[in-house]
Length: 337
Ligand SMILES: NC(=O)c1ccc[n+]([C@@H]2O[C@H](COP(=O)([O-])OP(=O)(O)OC[C@H]3O[C@@H](n4cnc5c(N)ncnc54)[C@H](O)[C@@H]3O)[C@@H](O)[C@H]2O)c1
Image: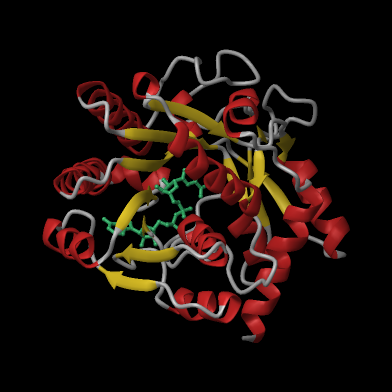
């Protein structure tokens, strides 16, 4: 039985691939390499001794999708492909809509044509916008603040509607908080080819000497130390959440065939707390300076993960220290390889 992972050479897709390959699934990766490289396949082979089937292509291209579904006995799709830079989405809203929303529609139409109805969609905590309460549960109102987040909300709406129209669909939208860290082999990690836009890739650049200091956007937030608080989750905990989701799809009832589920650690850390952890576990100093707040950034955002615990029988296990050690170990290994 094969699982198709769109965006399969990207950060989250590649880490899902490793666990699926280890669990003897046949894995097919589709990626247009807009934010990753094919070298990931080589690393997957090194880690698992098995090659994923890789196709370079676009999810908007129904011919490529059709070809893949004809060649493989695809049972389910993990749909990670998407553009994800919030700032870029403000500059290129149409591109984000075309790529993320229209691309998803193409995927869904080809899945339907081939009678494949199980889907795990990479959604995002950004759908909640400025939190009205904490911890944020799945009932929290949606308030996307940029075209990236809007694309996720639109896709969720499409998926929900589809599931109502046809009870064969079994769909989970996993709303990720902030995945960080790397696979234990340190051959895979967060390795974007484009401009990084999250805290960790920036910390890495300073740790590697590529930037002089870390810019911390704002120290006047309504938090104990004034810096923004986010929910960070180890990438391998996030992947475990996908494996549990695959099992959950098998037992989803026709009457409840679409669900949104938060995947986070269930607690928040401020930027200064993360930095302190990173410096301590890795014995490094990261110079930083405070700059203006970034537009759209919120004080505090962390997840209520009760639904994932109950429905998926899943619990994140790794600590912030594990995340910091793992992220830096990947970077160091990357320099050597
Ligand atoms: N990493 C995060 O912090 C985070 C948080 C919340 C949600 N997400 C979502 O999870 C998904 C995966 O994120 P990631 O961190 O692995 O990002 P990533 O950029 O590392 O991976 C996405 C992959 O999709 C590919 N891609 C983009 N558009 C494509 C298209 N049209 N056709 C084929 N391939 C395409 C890119 O080349 C990339 O390899 C994204 O949809 C993202 O929005 C990520």
